[in-house]
Image 1: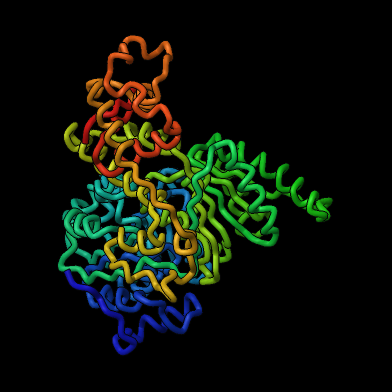
Image 2 (image 1 turned 30 degrees about the vertical axis):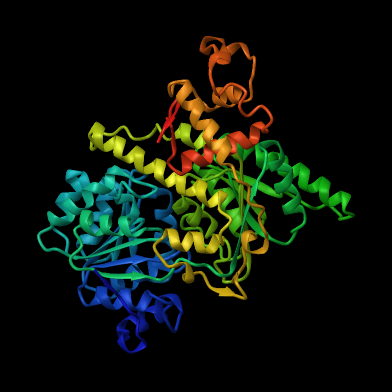
Amino acid sequence: MTQAVDSADSVDPRALEALNRYFGYDSFRPGQSGIVSAILAGRDVLGVMPTGAGKSICYQIPAAILPGVAIVISPLISLMRDQVDALNDVGLPAAFINTTQTPDEQDLVFAQALSGQIKLLYVAPERLETERFRNFAVRVPISLVAVDEAHCVSQWGQDFRSSYLGIGEFIAGLPTRPTVAAFTATATERVRRDIVSILGLHTPSITVTGFDRPNLYFDVISMPRKDKASWVASYIASHPDESGIVYCATRKETEALAESLNSAVAELRAAGGADVSDIGTIAVAYHGGMSADAREKAQRDFVTDRVPVVVATNAFGMGIDKSNVRFVIHHNMPESIEAYYQEAGRAGRDGEPSRCTLLWNESDIVTRRRLLDSDYENERLTPEEQEAVRASKRRLLDAMVGYCRTTDCLHAYMTRYFGETAGAAAKTDGKCVGGCANCEHTFETIDVTDIARAISRCVHDVNQHVGSGKIVKVLRGSKAQDLSYLNPESLLSFGMLDEVPEARIRDVLSQMATDGFLTIAEGRLPIVGFG
């Protein structure tokens, strides 16, 4: 694998001319020109670029210049129309084929592509497996296959999709192999290797533009669930002119929080002496269960600044063209560093200072572990492969828990996770540029060795057969009825930590699981065992 290096001298003049004609820019952003030049030279590429770095330009410019059609593989049908409309508006002919169209509408698109009227054709990965699309693909000259969200191909990535496993086979079945370009915002070294191997990239030029976002301030706050809504409301109330996204774990939560914010923020501003007579809607909900019209209206109101805050699940954000998002608040802990980096990275795409705050607590970890057992049933994977995916998800979650608990610089934690050295997070006077809560605070170190030993003793005493709640009760000497079958008073660990706060014991137990000393089974019975 080689690392592509940009050089102003190596920029293809055709690329600069197309960049100016279609998008009005005179120069490429870091990383873009090297990728564009490699594609135009017929070389496969892998571009790992943060959210907002302009990945789409990297395949749209070559598509405009090369003969034939470029196939763009994207997992998000909901965004295809927006991207195609935007390209047609600037004079770059584009279309999509997806399930929202009738067979007649699809036939029209196929005919336009075959007659050379379309330069970019957007499709979902599942489409490549249909006989109809394959019959079309062998008859049209394809200059480029661009794979967006390429990390979805890897079972080590945070968003593995089995439909991506068929892309390499599709490319191999074409009469003439086109250039292949893969793009992602989040990929560790292991995921990059998977992308190259599974997509079958030929000695690709690999560009990684760096993961640090020095204009973002990172903040992590441990907070009981009951306090989160009021914290978010007071933050929004004290930043009246700012636009922001609040991410929640469930659809139900987004609707409830958006509703409570609308009344709570108005009350807080009124209490502060502000005139709230014409305040309007503060927050709107957005999730995949809403109708397409309702989602579109919520998105449009947010992008056009009619509504300053959107409260959303992770269904919101990809492809949203809004550069002035000043804050991203996570109401719950995400399932991985990759997911957090991508969602938090929607703040400050204009380069201005912005804030990313993560609110979390122990119950967030429990919820995430419980959710790990779902969504892996599919015919492409054997039971062993499904278990490997689950194990990978558990490792991703452990890294996310580590981020919440670390006392290290949050910028450094993230860049190191993605394979950059700790020094990749820019520093001045020992503090990270942009700032993070950990670099500003000092921490008290507590020795929890005795607590950890007692927890291990208790896990042994109960033969690794109970969950964390009962372990805490045994250690604190509880006389609760639901422990009677264990005959707890006969256990050596009974009451060993009767003077230690319950929250401290839970905290240490959770950290032991994160560090691999203990395991917590996912599913309905989260039994604690030895790691």
